[in-house]
Image 1 (cartoon, rainbow, N blue to C red):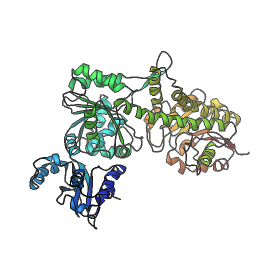
Image 2: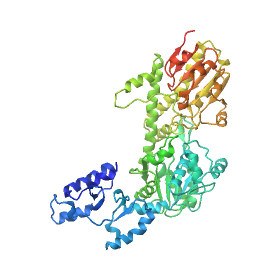
Image 3: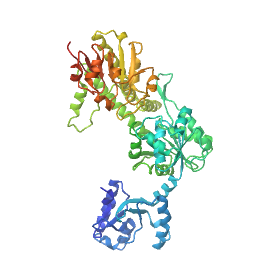
Image 4: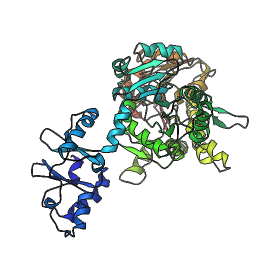
Length: 578
Protein backbone atom coordinates (compact mmCIF):
# COMPACT_ATOMS: atom_id res chain seq x y z
CA UNK A 1 0.00 0.00 0.00
CA UNK A 2 1.18 3.53 -0.85
CA UNK A 3 1.39 5.33 2.51
CA UNK A 4 0.70 8.57 0.66
CA UNK A 5 -2.98 7.56 0.70
CA UNK A 6 -2.96 8.40 4.40
CA UNK A 7 -2.80 12.13 3.57
CA UNK A 8 -5.18 12.02 0.59
CA UNK A 9 -8.80 13.21 0.58
CA UNK A 10 -11.49 14.18 -1.91
CA UNK A 11 -12.76 17.71 -2.52
CA UNK A 12 -15.69 17.11 -0.18
CA UNK A 13 -13.38 16.79 2.81
CA UNK A 14 -13.84 19.47 5.44
CA UNK A 15 -11.30 21.73 7.07
CA UNK A 16 -11.36 19.61 10.20
CA UNK A 17 -10.78 16.47 8.08
CA UNK A 18 -7.69 18.06 6.57
CA UNK A 19 -6.32 19.00 9.99
CA UNK A 20 -6.72 15.36 11.04
CA UNK A 21 -4.68 14.30 7.99
CA UNK A 22 -1.94 16.75 8.96
CA UNK A 23 -1.82 15.16 12.40
CA UNK A 24 -1.76 11.58 11.03
CA UNK A 25 1.18 12.23 8.69
CA UNK A 26 3.87 11.73 11.34
CA UNK A 27 2.55 8.24 12.13
CA UNK A 28 3.48 7.15 8.61
CA UNK A 29 6.77 9.07 8.37
CA UNK A 30 5.15 11.43 5.86
CA UNK A 31 5.69 15.19 5.54
CA UNK A 32 3.33 17.20 7.70
CA UNK A 33 1.41 20.30 6.70
CA UNK A 34 0.15 19.07 3.33
CA UNK A 35 -2.87 17.06 2.14
CA UNK A 36 -3.46 15.82 -1.40
CA UNK A 37 -6.89 16.19 -3.00
CA UNK A 38 -7.61 13.29 -5.38
CA UNK A 39 -10.60 11.92 -7.33
CA UNK A 40 -12.02 8.41 -7.22
CA UNK A 41 -9.18 7.15 -9.45
CA UNK A 42 -6.61 8.65 -7.06
CA UNK A 43 -5.65 11.27 -9.66
CA UNK A 44 -4.22 14.47 -8.20
CA UNK A 45 -6.67 17.39 -8.35
CA UNK A 46 -5.06 19.80 -5.91
CA UNK A 47 -3.17 20.33 -2.67
CA UNK A 48 -3.98 21.84 0.69
CA UNK A 49 -1.23 23.19 2.91
CA UNK A 50 -1.09 24.70 6.37
CA UNK A 51 -0.98 28.10 4.69
CA UNK A 52 -4.26 27.40 2.86
CA UNK A 53 -5.94 26.33 6.10
CA UNK A 54 -4.56 29.39 7.89
CA UNK A 55 -6.03 31.68 5.23
CA UNK A 56 -9.39 29.95 5.48
CA UNK A 57 -9.46 30.46 9.24
CA UNK A 58 -8.46 34.13 8.89
CA UNK A 59 -11.42 34.49 6.54
CA UNK A 60 -13.60 33.11 9.35
CA UNK A 61 -14.46 29.98 7.41
CA UNK A 62 -16.26 27.22 9.28
CA UNK A 63 -14.36 24.06 10.18
CA UNK A 64 -16.94 22.28 8.04
CA UNK A 65 -15.94 24.21 4.92
CA UNK A 66 -15.20 21.89 1.99
CA UNK A 67 -11.63 21.59 0.76
CA UNK A 68 -12.67 22.59 -2.77
CA UNK A 69 -13.01 26.18 -1.55
CA UNK A 70 -9.45 26.68 -0.36
CA UNK A 71 -7.29 24.06 -2.09
CA UNK A 72 -4.60 24.91 -4.67
CA UNK A 73 -6.17 23.76 -7.94
CA UNK A 74 -3.00 24.26 -9.98
CA UNK A 75 -0.34 22.56 -7.86
CA UNK A 76 3.25 22.09 -8.93
CA UNK A 77 4.01 18.43 -9.55
CA UNK A 78 6.63 16.44 -11.45
CA UNK A 79 6.97 13.04 -13.06
CA UNK A 80 8.45 10.53 -10.62
CA UNK A 81 11.10 9.47 -13.15
CA UNK A 82 12.73 12.90 -13.36
CA UNK A 83 16.12 13.30 -11.70
CA UNK A 84 16.75 15.83 -8.95
CA UNK A 85 18.77 17.98 -11.36
CA UNK A 86 15.93 17.92 -13.92
CA UNK A 87 13.34 18.92 -11.32
CA UNK A 88 15.44 21.82 -10.11
CA UNK A 89 15.97 22.95 -13.70
CA UNK A 90 12.25 22.88 -14.53
CA UNK A 91 11.04 24.31 -11.23
CA UNK A 92 11.74 28.02 -11.96
CA UNK A 93 9.67 27.78 -15.16
CA UNK A 94 6.76 26.28 -13.23
CA UNK A 95 6.98 29.08 -10.67
CA UNK A 96 6.94 31.74 -13.41
CA UNK A 97 3.93 30.10 -15.10
CA UNK A 98 2.03 30.51 -11.84
CA UNK A 99 3.36 34.05 -11.36
CA UNK A 100 5.30 33.05 -8.25
CA UNK A 101 8.41 35.18 -8.05
CA UNK A 102 10.14 33.17 -5.30
CA UNK A 103 10.27 29.60 -4.05
CA UNK A 104 9.62 30.70 -0.48
CA UNK A 105 5.97 29.85 -1.04
CA UNK A 106 6.89 26.30 -2.08
CA UNK A 107 7.85 23.92 0.70
CA UNK A 108 6.69 20.59 -0.76
CA UNK A 109 6.98 19.08 -4.24
CA UNK A 110 4.63 16.31 -5.36
CA UNK A 111 5.81 13.51 -7.65
CA UNK A 112 3.21 11.60 -9.70
CA UNK A 113 3.20 8.52 -11.91
CA UNK A 114 2.11 8.42 -15.55
CA UNK A 115 -1.55 8.31 -14.45
CA UNK A 116 -1.00 11.54 -12.47
CA UNK A 117 -1.44 9.63 -9.21
CA UNK A 118 0.72 10.97 -6.35
CA UNK A 119 3.55 8.61 -5.36
CA UNK A 120 5.97 10.75 -3.34
CA UNK A 121 6.41 14.14 -1.71
CA UNK A 122 9.77 15.88 -1.56
CA UNK A 123 10.77 18.66 0.78
CA UNK A 124 12.07 21.58 -1.27
CA UNK A 125 15.09 22.19 0.97
CA UNK A 126 15.81 18.45 1.12
CA UNK A 127 15.85 18.50 -2.70
CA UNK A 128 18.65 21.04 -2.76
CA UNK A 129 20.55 19.11 -0.08
CA UNK A 130 20.35 15.95 -2.14
CA UNK A 131 21.50 17.73 -5.27
CA UNK A 132 24.56 18.99 -3.47
CA UNK A 133 25.17 15.63 -1.79
CA UNK A 134 25.02 13.59 -5.00
CA UNK A 135 27.78 15.67 -6.56
CA UNK A 136 30.16 15.31 -3.63
CA UNK A 137 33.35 13.31 -3.64
CA UNK A 138 33.12 10.73 -0.84
CA UNK A 139 36.41 9.50 0.62
CA UNK A 140 36.19 6.39 2.81
CA UNK A 141 39.23 5.65 4.96
CA UNK A 142 39.65 1.95 5.69
CA UNK A 143 38.56 -0.74 3.22
CA UNK A 144 37.83 -3.42 5.78
CA UNK A 145 34.43 -5.05 6.04
CA UNK A 146 32.62 -1.86 7.08
CA UNK A 147 34.37 0.49 4.69
CA UNK A 148 34.25 -1.67 1.57
CA UNK A 149 30.58 -2.55 1.79
CA UNK A 150 29.75 1.10 2.46
CA UNK A 151 31.87 2.20 -0.50
CA UNK A 152 30.24 -0.03 -3.11
CA UNK A 153 26.71 0.77 -1.89
CA UNK A 154 27.40 4.52 -2.06
CA UNK A 155 28.98 4.15 -5.50
CA UNK A 156 25.93 2.19 -6.65
CA UNK A 157 23.75 5.06 -5.38
CA UNK A 158 25.57 7.43 -7.72
CA UNK A 159 28.22 8.99 -5.49
CA UNK A 160 31.82 9.35 -6.60
CA UNK A 161 33.70 7.31 -3.98
CA UNK A 162 37.40 6.88 -3.30
CA UNK A 163 38.41 4.12 -0.90
CA UNK A 164 41.70 4.61 0.91
CA UNK A 165 43.51 1.34 1.65
CA UNK A 166 47.16 1.32 2.75
CA UNK A 167 47.55 -2.48 2.65
CA UNK A 168 49.26 -3.21 -0.66
CA UNK A 169 47.70 -6.64 -1.22
CA UNK A 170 44.19 -5.33 -0.57
CA UNK A 171 44.85 -2.30 -2.76
CA UNK A 172 45.95 -4.49 -5.67
CA UNK A 173 42.92 -6.76 -5.37
CA UNK A 174 40.46 -3.87 -5.22
CA UNK A 175 42.12 -2.20 -8.20
CA UNK A 176 41.30 -5.33 -10.21
CA UNK A 177 37.73 -5.45 -8.90
CA UNK A 178 38.44 -8.44 -6.69
CA UNK A 179 36.93 -8.64 -3.20
CA UNK A 180 38.85 -10.18 -0.30
CA UNK A 181 35.65 -10.24 1.77
CA UNK A 182 32.90 -12.83 1.40
CA UNK A 183 29.58 -11.03 1.33
CA UNK A 184 26.53 -11.89 -0.75
CA UNK A 185 26.48 -9.66 -3.85
CA UNK A 186 29.67 -7.77 -2.97
CA UNK A 187 31.91 -9.18 -5.70
CA UNK A 188 29.37 -8.44 -8.42
CA UNK A 189 28.73 -4.89 -7.21
CA UNK A 190 32.45 -4.20 -6.82
CA UNK A 191 33.15 -5.40 -10.36
CA UNK A 192 30.38 -3.15 -11.65
CA UNK A 193 31.52 0.00 -9.83
CA UNK A 194 35.34 -0.19 -9.81
CA UNK A 195 36.81 2.64 -11.89
CA UNK A 196 33.30 3.81 -12.64
CA UNK A 197 31.98 5.43 -9.47
CA UNK A 198 34.36 3.67 -7.09
CA UNK A 199 38.11 4.23 -7.11
CA UNK A 200 40.78 2.99 -4.75
CA UNK A 201 43.90 4.80 -3.55
CA UNK A 202 46.76 4.19 -1.14
CA UNK A 203 47.01 7.92 -0.45
CA UNK A 204 44.51 10.41 0.97
CA UNK A 205 42.95 12.37 -1.94
CA UNK A 206 43.53 16.12 -1.74
CA UNK A 207 40.11 17.12 -3.02
CA UNK A 208 37.54 15.19 -1.01
CA UNK A 209 34.22 16.70 0.08
CA UNK A 210 33.08 14.10 2.61
CA UNK A 211 35.46 11.92 4.64
CA UNK A 212 34.06 8.75 6.21
CA UNK A 213 36.32 7.09 8.79
CA UNK A 214 35.81 3.32 9.06
CA UNK A 215 39.11 2.14 10.50
CA UNK A 216 39.35 -0.56 13.15
CA UNK A 217 39.31 0.10 16.89
CA UNK A 218 40.61 -3.18 18.35
CA UNK A 219 41.05 -3.77 22.07
CA UNK A 220 44.21 -4.68 23.97
CA UNK A 221 44.98 -5.59 27.58
CA UNK A 222 46.39 -2.71 29.64
CA UNK A 223 48.69 -2.93 32.67
CA UNK A 224 45.68 -3.41 34.96
CA UNK A 225 44.48 -6.45 33.03
CA UNK A 226 41.53 -4.64 31.42
CA UNK A 227 40.79 -4.65 27.70
CA UNK A 228 40.75 -1.09 26.34
CA UNK A 229 40.26 0.26 22.79
CA UNK A 230 43.30 1.02 20.65
CA UNK A 231 42.90 4.42 18.98
CA UNK A 232 46.08 4.39 16.85
CA UNK A 233 44.29 3.78 13.52
CA UNK A 234 41.72 6.46 14.27
CA UNK A 235 44.35 9.03 15.23
CA UNK A 236 46.30 8.28 12.06
CA UNK A 237 43.18 8.70 9.90
CA UNK A 238 42.35 12.04 11.56
CA UNK A 239 45.94 13.23 11.04
CA UNK A 240 45.79 12.47 7.33
CA UNK A 241 42.36 14.03 6.87
CA UNK A 242 43.44 17.13 8.75
CA UNK A 243 46.21 17.80 6.22
CA UNK A 244 43.78 17.85 3.26
CA UNK A 245 40.68 19.24 5.02
CA UNK A 246 39.05 22.23 3.30
CA UNK A 247 36.38 24.65 4.39
CA UNK A 248 32.92 23.18 3.95
CA UNK A 249 34.09 19.55 4.23
CA UNK A 250 32.14 16.99 6.24
CA UNK A 251 33.81 14.28 8.36
CA UNK A 252 31.74 11.25 9.40
CA UNK A 253 33.02 8.75 11.96
CA UNK A 254 31.64 5.24 11.44
CA UNK A 255 34.01 3.19 13.60
CA UNK A 256 32.80 1.89 16.97
CA UNK A 257 34.36 4.06 19.68
CA UNK A 258 33.91 5.02 23.35
CA UNK A 259 31.36 7.74 24.02
CA UNK A 260 32.98 11.15 23.63
CA UNK A 261 35.54 10.12 21.00
CA UNK A 262 34.10 12.26 18.22
CA UNK A 263 34.24 15.43 20.28
CA UNK A 264 37.37 14.79 22.34
CA UNK A 265 39.56 12.93 19.85
CA UNK A 266 38.39 13.38 16.26
CA UNK A 267 37.31 17.04 16.52
CA UNK A 268 40.39 18.09 18.47
CA UNK A 269 42.77 16.30 16.13
CA UNK A 270 41.15 17.71 13.00
CA UNK A 271 41.19 21.25 14.42
CA UNK A 272 44.78 20.92 15.58
CA UNK A 273 46.10 19.68 12.22
CA UNK A 274 43.94 21.78 9.87
CA UNK A 275 43.73 25.00 11.85
CA UNK A 276 39.99 25.10 11.13
CA UNK A 277 37.13 25.33 13.61
CA UNK A 278 34.57 22.52 13.80
CA UNK A 279 31.00 23.64 13.16
CA UNK A 280 32.22 26.77 11.38
CA UNK A 281 34.84 25.74 8.84
CA UNK A 282 34.03 22.03 8.65
CA UNK A 283 31.33 19.67 9.90
CA UNK A 284 31.49 16.51 12.00
CA UNK A 285 29.07 13.69 12.77
CA UNK A 286 28.83 10.11 13.97
CA UNK A 287 26.83 7.63 11.88
CA UNK A 288 27.34 4.09 13.24
CA UNK A 289 27.50 0.98 11.10
CA UNK A 290 25.01 -1.63 12.36
CA UNK A 291 24.91 -4.26 9.60
CA UNK A 292 25.24 -8.00 10.06
CA UNK A 293 27.91 -9.83 8.09
CA UNK A 294 26.22 -11.93 5.44
CA UNK A 295 23.52 -9.38 4.65
CA UNK A 296 25.37 -6.06 4.84
CA UNK A 297 24.47 -4.79 1.35
CA UNK A 298 20.79 -5.35 2.02
CA UNK A 299 20.86 -3.82 5.49
CA UNK A 300 22.84 -0.75 4.39
CA UNK A 301 19.88 0.05 2.16
CA UNK A 302 17.13 -0.92 4.60
CA UNK A 303 18.20 -0.38 8.22
CA UNK A 304 17.48 3.02 9.77
CA UNK A 305 20.63 5.15 9.86
CA UNK A 306 21.30 6.79 13.22
CA UNK A 307 23.05 10.15 12.96
CA UNK A 308 24.37 12.50 15.60
CA UNK A 309 25.98 15.81 14.61
CA UNK A 310 28.37 18.26 16.25
CA UNK A 311 25.79 20.91 15.40
CA UNK A 312 22.59 21.09 13.35
CA UNK A 313 24.44 21.89 10.12
CA UNK A 314 26.59 18.79 10.61
CA UNK A 315 23.47 16.71 11.25
CA UNK A 316 21.62 17.95 8.19
CA UNK A 317 24.65 17.61 5.89
CA UNK A 318 25.09 13.98 6.96
CA UNK A 319 21.37 13.28 6.59
CA UNK A 320 21.56 14.56 3.01
CA UNK A 321 24.29 12.01 2.26
CA UNK A 322 22.56 8.97 3.74
CA UNK A 323 19.12 9.90 2.46
CA UNK A 324 20.10 8.58 -0.97
CA UNK A 325 20.91 5.18 0.52
CA UNK A 326 18.47 4.30 3.28
CA UNK A 327 14.76 5.18 3.59
CA UNK A 328 14.87 6.07 7.28
CA UNK A 329 17.10 8.58 9.05
CA UNK A 330 17.09 8.63 12.85
CA UNK A 331 18.46 11.94 14.12
CA UNK A 332 19.64 11.97 17.71
CA UNK A 333 20.46 14.96 19.87
CA UNK A 334 24.26 14.77 19.83
CA UNK A 335 27.27 12.88 18.54
CA UNK A 336 27.57 11.29 22.00
CA UNK A 337 24.01 9.95 21.74
CA UNK A 338 24.83 8.32 18.39
CA UNK A 339 28.04 6.81 19.78
CA UNK A 340 26.09 5.37 22.71
CA UNK A 341 23.33 3.96 20.48
CA UNK A 342 25.86 1.83 18.62
CA UNK A 343 27.32 0.46 21.86
CA UNK A 344 23.85 -0.24 23.24
CA UNK A 345 22.95 -2.45 20.28
CA UNK A 346 25.99 -4.70 20.51
CA UNK A 347 26.44 -4.89 24.27
CA UNK A 348 22.77 -5.73 24.75
CA UNK A 349 23.04 -8.58 22.24
CA UNK A 350 26.18 -9.91 23.90
CA UNK A 351 24.52 -9.81 27.32
CA UNK A 352 21.32 -11.64 26.36
CA UNK A 353 23.38 -14.27 24.54
CA UNK A 354 25.36 -14.67 27.76
CA UNK A 355 22.12 -15.34 29.63
CA UNK A 356 21.25 -18.16 27.25
CA UNK A 357 24.76 -19.60 27.47
CA UNK A 358 24.69 -19.54 31.26
CA UNK A 359 21.40 -21.48 31.10
CA UNK A 360 23.14 -24.04 28.89
CA UNK A 361 25.83 -24.56 31.53
CA UNK A 362 23.20 -24.96 34.24
CA UNK A 363 21.22 -27.43 32.10
CA UNK A 364 24.38 -29.48 31.51
CA UNK A 365 24.45 -30.32 35.22
CA UNK A 366 21.12 -32.12 34.80
CA UNK A 367 21.71 -33.51 31.29
CA UNK A 368 18.83 -31.39 29.98
CA UNK A 369 18.60 -30.29 26.35
CA UNK A 370 18.54 -26.53 26.92
CA UNK A 371 17.37 -25.88 23.34
CA UNK A 372 14.14 -27.78 24.03
CA UNK A 373 13.65 -26.01 27.36
CA UNK A 374 14.13 -22.51 25.91
CA UNK A 375 11.82 -23.28 23.01
CA UNK A 376 9.20 -24.48 25.51
CA UNK A 377 9.65 -21.32 27.60
CA UNK A 378 9.19 -19.14 24.52
CA UNK A 379 6.23 -21.05 23.09
CA UNK A 380 3.21 -18.73 23.05
CA UNK A 381 4.89 -16.38 25.50
CA UNK A 382 5.10 -13.05 23.67
CA UNK A 383 7.19 -11.20 26.25
CA UNK A 384 10.96 -11.09 25.87
CA UNK A 385 11.80 -14.34 24.03
CA UNK A 386 15.01 -15.93 25.26
CA UNK A 387 17.64 -16.48 22.54
CA UNK A 388 19.13 -19.91 21.93
CA UNK A 389 22.62 -20.64 23.27
CA UNK A 390 25.76 -21.28 21.24
CA UNK A 391 29.34 -22.54 21.71
CA UNK A 392 30.32 -18.92 22.23
CA UNK A 393 29.72 -15.42 20.87
CA UNK A 394 32.41 -14.27 18.45
CA UNK A 395 33.01 -11.88 15.60
CA UNK A 396 34.79 -8.55 15.29
CA UNK A 397 32.05 -6.54 17.05
CA UNK A 398 30.52 -8.40 19.98
CA UNK A 399 33.92 -9.55 21.24
CA UNK A 400 35.19 -5.99 21.69
CA UNK A 401 32.24 -3.59 22.04
CA UNK A 402 31.40 -4.65 25.63
CA UNK A 403 35.01 -3.84 26.56
CA UNK A 404 34.71 -0.46 24.84
CA UNK A 405 31.55 0.33 26.81
CA UNK A 406 33.20 -0.91 29.99
CA UNK A 407 36.09 1.51 29.40
CA UNK A 408 33.51 4.32 29.38
CA UNK A 409 32.05 3.31 32.75
CA UNK A 410 35.56 3.07 34.18
CA UNK A 411 36.06 6.78 33.47
CA UNK A 412 33.28 7.60 35.92
CA UNK A 413 33.97 4.81 38.43
CA UNK A 414 30.67 3.16 37.54
CA UNK A 415 30.27 -0.58 37.98
CA UNK A 416 30.80 -2.00 34.48
CA UNK A 417 30.38 -5.64 35.48
CA UNK A 418 27.21 -5.94 33.42
CA UNK A 419 29.41 -5.74 30.31
CA UNK A 420 32.40 -7.74 31.53
CA UNK A 421 30.25 -10.47 33.11
CA UNK A 422 28.38 -11.13 29.87
CA UNK A 423 31.65 -11.26 27.96
CA UNK A 424 33.21 -13.66 30.51
CA UNK A 425 30.24 -16.00 30.32
CA UNK A 426 30.36 -16.09 26.53
CA UNK A 427 34.10 -16.66 26.51
CA UNK A 428 33.75 -19.37 29.17
CA UNK A 429 31.78 -21.44 26.67
CA UNK A 430 35.07 -22.28 24.96
CA UNK A 431 36.30 -24.14 28.05
CA UNK A 432 32.83 -25.62 28.55
CA UNK A 433 32.89 -27.19 25.07
CA UNK A 434 36.52 -28.29 25.37
CA UNK A 435 36.02 -29.96 28.76
CA UNK A 436 32.85 -31.72 27.60
CA UNK A 437 34.57 -33.21 24.56
CA UNK A 438 37.71 -34.26 26.50
CA UNK A 439 35.60 -35.86 29.22
CA UNK A 440 33.54 -37.85 26.74
CA UNK A 441 36.62 -38.97 24.81
CA UNK A 442 38.03 -40.36 28.05
CA UNK A 443 34.72 -41.98 29.01
CA UNK A 444 34.60 -43.68 25.61
CA UNK A 445 37.93 -45.33 26.42
CA UNK A 446 40.09 -43.30 24.05
CA UNK A 447 43.58 -41.99 24.66
CA UNK A 448 43.10 -38.27 24.14
CA UNK A 449 46.66 -37.71 22.91
CA UNK A 450 46.03 -40.19 20.06
CA UNK A 451 42.75 -38.62 18.95
CA UNK A 452 42.02 -36.70 15.75
CA UNK A 453 39.59 -33.79 16.06
CA UNK A 454 37.65 -32.17 13.19
CA UNK A 455 36.18 -28.71 13.74
CA UNK A 456 33.38 -27.90 11.29
CA UNK A 457 32.35 -24.26 10.91
CA UNK A 458 35.39 -22.06 11.52
CA UNK A 459 33.84 -18.72 10.51
CA UNK A 460 32.49 -16.80 13.49
CA UNK A 461 28.94 -17.45 12.31
CA UNK A 462 27.23 -19.63 9.75
CA UNK A 463 23.86 -17.97 9.22
CA UNK A 464 23.85 -15.58 7.47
CA UNK A 465 27.00 -17.09 6.06
CA UNK A 466 30.37 -15.42 6.20
CA UNK A 467 33.95 -16.51 5.69
CA UNK A 468 35.24 -14.21 8.43
CA UNK A 469 37.38 -16.18 10.89
CA UNK A 470 38.42 -13.14 12.92
CA UNK A 471 37.53 -13.48 16.61
CA UNK A 472 35.90 -16.81 15.88
CA UNK A 473 34.87 -18.92 18.87
CA UNK A 474 35.53 -22.00 16.73
CA UNK A 475 39.19 -21.05 16.39
CA UNK A 476 39.43 -20.29 20.12
CA UNK A 477 37.99 -23.72 20.93
CA UNK A 478 40.28 -25.44 18.44
CA UNK A 479 43.31 -23.80 20.09
CA UNK A 480 42.38 -25.39 23.41
CA UNK A 481 42.88 -28.83 21.88
CA UNK A 482 46.38 -27.87 20.70
CA UNK A 483 48.88 -30.11 22.48
CA UNK A 484 46.14 -32.31 23.96
CA UNK A 485 45.13 -34.27 20.86
CA UNK A 486 47.11 -35.81 18.00
CA UNK A 487 45.86 -33.56 15.21
CA UNK A 488 43.30 -30.77 14.71
CA UNK A 489 41.55 -30.61 11.34
CA UNK A 490 39.17 -27.94 10.11
CA UNK A 491 36.42 -27.38 7.56
CA UNK A 492 34.40 -24.31 6.65
CA UNK A 493 31.78 -23.92 3.94
CA UNK A 494 33.02 -20.42 2.99
CA UNK A 495 36.51 -19.70 4.35
CA UNK A 496 39.38 -20.82 2.13
CA UNK A 497 41.92 -23.52 2.97
CA UNK A 498 44.60 -20.80 3.09
CA UNK A 499 42.67 -18.86 5.71
CA UNK A 500 42.14 -22.00 7.79
CA UNK A 501 45.84 -22.92 7.56
CA UNK A 502 46.76 -19.47 8.87
CA UNK A 503 45.33 -20.56 12.22
CA UNK A 504 47.51 -23.70 12.34
CA UNK A 505 44.55 -25.95 11.54
CA UNK A 506 44.83 -28.61 8.83
CA UNK A 507 42.06 -28.00 6.26
CA UNK A 508 39.99 -30.91 4.91
CA UNK A 509 36.91 -31.36 2.77
CA UNK A 510 33.79 -33.24 3.75
CA UNK A 511 32.56 -35.93 3.73
CA UNK A 512 36.08 -37.35 3.18
CA UNK A 513 37.34 -35.37 6.16
CA UNK A 514 35.16 -37.40 8.55
CA UNK A 515 37.30 -40.49 7.96
CA UNK A 516 39.44 -41.60 10.91
CA UNK A 517 38.14 -38.85 13.20
CA UNK A 518 37.54 -39.53 16.88
CA UNK A 519 35.42 -36.41 17.35
CA UNK A 520 33.69 -33.97 15.03
CA UNK A 521 32.65 -30.60 16.45
CA UNK A 522 29.98 -28.49 14.70
CA UNK A 523 30.70 -24.99 15.95
CA UNK A 524 28.67 -22.76 13.64
CA UNK A 525 25.24 -23.17 12.09
CA UNK A 526 25.93 -23.04 8.35
CA UNK A 527 22.85 -24.30 6.51
CA UNK A 528 24.86 -26.91 4.58
CA UNK A 529 25.40 -28.94 7.77
CA UNK A 530 21.71 -29.75 8.00
CA UNK A 531 21.98 -31.61 4.67
CA UNK A 532 24.78 -33.91 5.78
CA UNK A 533 24.36 -37.67 5.51
CA UNK A 534 24.55 -38.52 9.21
CA UNK A 535 24.83 -42.26 8.58
CA UNK A 536 27.80 -41.80 6.23
CA UNK A 537 29.50 -39.37 8.61
CA UNK A 538 29.33 -41.62 11.65
CA UNK A 539 30.31 -44.72 9.70
CA UNK A 540 33.48 -43.03 8.39
CA UNK A 541 34.63 -42.12 11.90
CA UNK A 542 36.70 -44.24 14.23
CA UNK A 543 35.32 -46.58 16.86
CA UNK A 544 33.10 -44.97 19.52
CA UNK A 545 33.14 -41.51 17.92
CA UNK A 546 32.00 -38.25 19.53
CA UNK A 547 29.73 -35.88 17.57
CA UNK A 548 29.50 -32.50 19.26
CA UNK A 549 26.47 -30.54 18.02
CA UNK A 550 26.84 -27.00 19.31
CA UNK A 551 23.79 -25.66 17.45
CA UNK A 552 21.28 -28.48 17.90
CA UNK A 553 21.46 -29.22 14.17
CA UNK A 554 20.81 -32.96 14.34
CA UNK A 555 18.53 -35.44 16.08
CA UNK A 556 20.59 -37.37 18.59
CA UNK A 557 18.59 -40.51 17.75
CA UNK A 558 19.90 -40.37 14.17
CA UNK A 559 23.51 -40.13 15.35
CA UNK A 560 23.63 -42.86 17.97
CA UNK A 561 21.56 -45.33 15.92
CA UNK A 562 24.30 -45.74 13.29
CA UNK A 563 26.88 -47.46 15.51
CA UNK A 564 28.13 -47.18 19.10
CA UNK A 565 28.76 -43.44 19.45
CA UNK A 566 28.09 -40.39 21.59
CA UNK A 567 25.96 -37.41 20.67
CA UNK A 568 27.14 -34.42 22.66
CA UNK A 569 25.20 -31.16 22.79
CA UNK A 570 25.84 -27.94 24.67
CA UNK A 571 24.00 -29.20 27.71
CA UNK A 572 23.30 -32.91 27.36
CA UNK A 573 24.66 -36.12 25.90
CA UNK A 574 23.34 -39.46 24.71
CA UNK A 575 25.42 -42.58 24.12
CA UNK A 576 24.30 -45.65 22.18
CA UNK A 577 24.59 -49.00 23.86
CA UNK A 578 27.22 -51.41 22.48
